[in-house]
Length: 195
Image 1: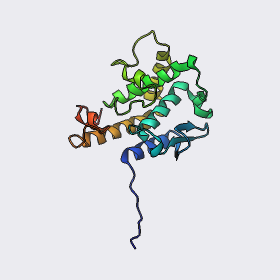
Image 2: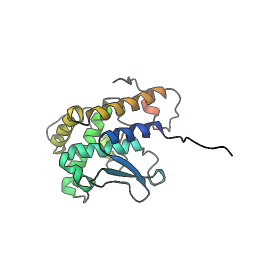
Image 3: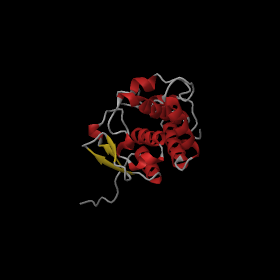
Image 4: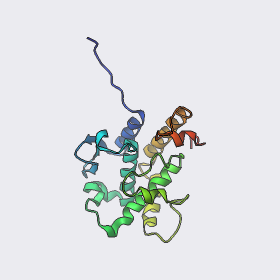
């Protein structure tokens, strides 16, 4: 009988699990949650069979990183970034997260790849070309402050590297994806992996 010594893992998942680790998050998978932060270093994400077909681990990790950046350092010690009970009056916190997510993904031309897959997808899809611009949305100050942390704070390097590595894979897939692939639009776009 052949002895199996190595296993295959999705390269993009490896990239984002590594980045999360550098940001102090250990990724675990469970079929009992969609996503949950325990306030003590563990980010639990649903197993593939519990998620939608257009969900991917990279997108889900980025989304949670954006929540953490929007809520600030104190949220790291709170379950679900202090947002565990959804209050409609605080919907702008989710909107801020989505604005930041789009802005970060735009750096490597991958906004649709990293799109939200929840009930907030419609909001994400209608964000303007410059998702951090404007002055009449209560989500903007949160998103703009989080952007500064994403660019200059302690998570900036692992976040930037994970985005760049993901874009490099998208470049490698140019011309080989089918139209129903999450990678298809990105592979056809003219963006550099070094963006």
